[in-house]
Length: 399
Image 1 (spheres, rainbow, N blue to C red):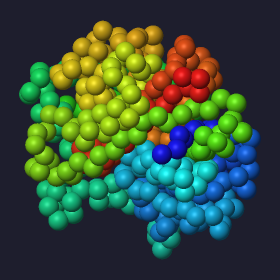
Image 2 (spheres, rainbow, N blue to C red; image 1 turned 90 degrees about the vertical axis):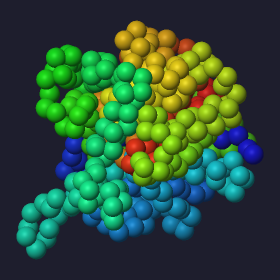
Image 3 (cartoon, rainbow, N blue to C red; image 1 turned 180 degrees about the vertical axis):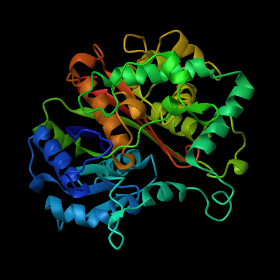
Image 4 (cartoon, helix red, strand yellow; image 1 turned 135 degrees about the vertical axis):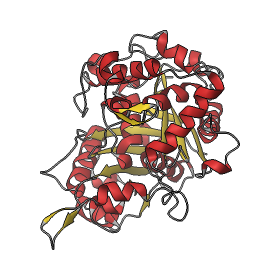
């Protein structure tokens, strides 16, 4: 298996609405930036992997076909990936395989989401398909009619974790929200940078116990792209490559009733373990310098500390209490602001997280830079209760 490098990075801002750009214009912008960062042209791209999670969002069946055309990449081969919130990470996994296998030497991995373009032309107004489309992720025969939503599914897992381990407490969850909104202040591409207090979080409207408004991520529109290359080609063009040294993935039971337990995300643990083992990471807390983890909800970030082996089971709340995951802690998490602070554009999120880690490894994260960062972890999750997880370990070129 060949080594795979990240040689180009490109992203748009994440916003609640990009009224002035279509999904293919956003994708074009991210692709152009990634190619420019790598010093390459479209002619240097051998294949493409597109992460686009929901046709309803973009108001277009098979939107990757239109995007591929708009960027000007036919007849180069492409494939589209869709695994909910984990779509960006899944696209990276497929792109990695294209290069590592020897099939191609370079790959554009591009994720984009435009979640609010639904429009009823007969009525002449916006339509509510965005909200309806998100509900279709639940089993439409059993779970959806019973009222299951993304929020209630995760709330069930958090409640089980609280019953098993006594946490995370709501005050600990609030600290995650404060941290990630605060980290976003130093990220010019973030959608929701702000200073908030524990009282702001605790007093925000209840969504679905134990989640309140500020415990939830923000839904975004945006695009992110990376250029992957084989080691031989990367050494020809890249001054500062970042290596993907570990990849792990799992597809857990989407039905909560089929799982062995509800208090952990077993698929996330499997994906993290595989990625860490592949990269030769024996002690994640000691050997990693930073991580971008799933914070679709504040409590899922705390559970991710445990599922990614940064601490023991039931000890995630203590990590946030002790400040370990703050920007100046020994294991900073979500310096980008995460899904809560930077935003969650499902097709692009895992790629955005990867770009963030790469910037730190390249020493280019500006005022949010993690000093002397050499190795980082990305956890990309999606589907009911983290049905999909992809984890990546990334290392600095001289590591």
